[in-house]
Amino acid sequence: MKDPAIEKLLKKEAERQKYSLDLIPSENIVSKEVLRVLGSEFTNKYAEGYPRARYYGGNEYADELEELCRARALAAFRLSPAKWHVNVQPYSGSPANLAVYLGLVPPGEKIMGMQLAMGGHLTHGHTVSATGKFWTAVRYGVDKKTELLDYAALMKLARREKPRLIVAGYTAYPRMIDFRKFRRIADAVHAYLMVDMSHFAGLVAGGAYPTPFDYADIVTTTTHKTLRGPRGAMIFMNRASKIAKRNGVDIAKAVDRAVFPGLQGGPHLNQIAAAAVALREDAAPAFRAYARQIVRNAKALSAELARLGWRLVAGGSDTHLILMDVASQGLSGKEASVRLEKNGIIANMNTIPYDPRPPMDPSGIRLGTPALTTRGMKEKEMKEVARLIDAVLRENRDVRKDVRKLCARFKV
Image 1: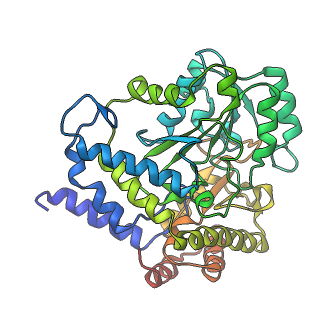
Image 2: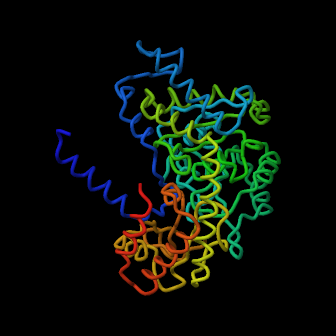
Image 3: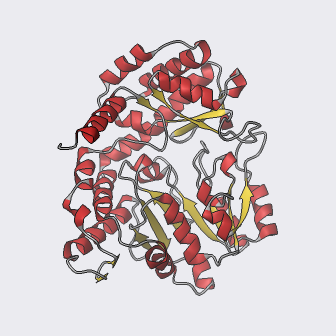
């Protein structure tokens, strides 16, 4: 490389990843093929519009690429193209969610999503997000005692507020979602059901988490996280949506128009190409084993942390992530995160339900197993990781050598 400053940073980042235990649930390690395609010749091409309807010339292979990515997206989730349409152009998860609202919900109308502090996402209607400024947000949480979704309470809230769209799918909810119950709630008030499966999409593709496609009108997801692809997003639209038909809406056309020209210009073809590579990997039998191992690892990590005396939100995990209450042991989430990072254990501070502490210094940390599972770690290593976390947080012990030894056994 002719740029020594960037080359130096690349080497430092590669070294950091090699010798760190990445427990951030929204991060993963992509294949060499995904990295290769991200830096491919498709980076050079502008392709504003959709396949066979571009505003620029020279898009013969761009059209083939986008159509291939769409086909692979449907195949990865075992979907019929007659029933489902997919848009693979969103730059990331936030504009994907914004596009859905823009296409289906008139400005000022109500969208119902989980509170950010309870495990939701900024784009589910938070006040600092455009989604909370352009639409009226109806926010729900979890039961204070169980820290689980209370579907009866959700039904009451929906009947009272009558939102146009209900969002299920979260960034810090460690248990499985009952999509059938959400469908009943949405049908009771004639609302669209949108599932944001960004966090658990890879588990759905791998058969380790219930599919939302049997119940949702719209499904959004990022292409990274558990899908182990590049940073990008996709929107799946149910052509058979009864709510869309009731509203006289062509759901595929409405959302496509919201993506382009509503929000974005030309798609990032290199990103779409890399997503296509990852989706092919996601459809392989090996990925199903990987997805199941992610969940087994999360269960093993949570069980060992609980045995060591740590309180886990909602009592544990059914998925890839764990929300751990560190305030119960006299720490703040920020302090815990900083202390762990100094020892090569990467987690992120996170609010817990009904958190008395502020978001920038909350009561919890969020842990996940996708990246460590990609490296080949299994239940035995998860118990070891739990003990390292405990040693750092409870005893303030220096475990950097132990972390490096464990990382050296499992290559990036």
